[in-house]
Length: 261
Image 1 (cartoon, rainbow, N blue to C red):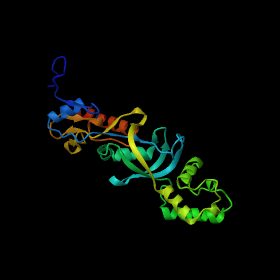
Image 2: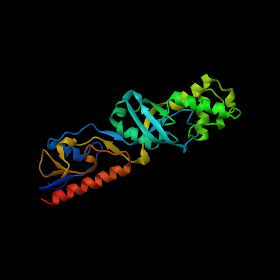
Image 3: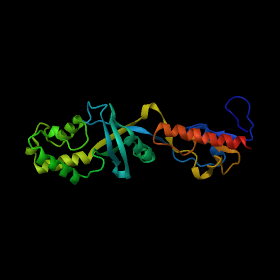
Image 4: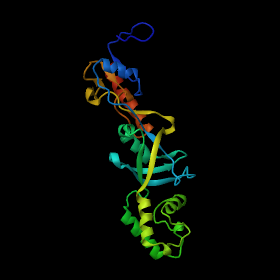
């Protein structure tokens, strides 16, 4: 029997909880009343607030393949990165936020983000690429000689941050300066100061403990005929599409299992 805040009690012999996973979810309250554990809730799938001169005015630019990390929490993800008005977004950032949802929440979204703009090269390998460019294209300005797949405007910002004017002939750039450019390109560090939801969607990490649910039927192992679907469970995906699919799939399983009784 369910007792709503208004109206008569509702009696049912089967119940599917599909109330979503936000804070103060009535579904979690009901599940808890049947003895279910609710894992820690935290926002997932969000973008990063970063205020940094290297990004100023570059909103809309993207890099096809990067590696981003929060080294303090041993979080690493790869993929495209998008510069926004407020900082950084794109698949690499969203994946990092999803896999690190609880850890980043514990840090109150204040942490150092490391970006490898080449995705896979370390500083030594990047310096070798730059040295090859210096040998082969010494008469050209270093701003026009980028051995990495980066937009020109981002490359210029990295050069300036490494104290090398983009107009400098690459033949005149010292090996020490090349090393500094290589480190900036492969180990840029940005201070994250907050988060934003991706396109205003809200995805929650956390919910009903998965070990307490039979996934063949989406049924509670603690209370027969109590079933679950969607983000009421401790599930969340790395894009909104994955979360929709999880809701549809678990809802279908729960619906057929309930109807079969």
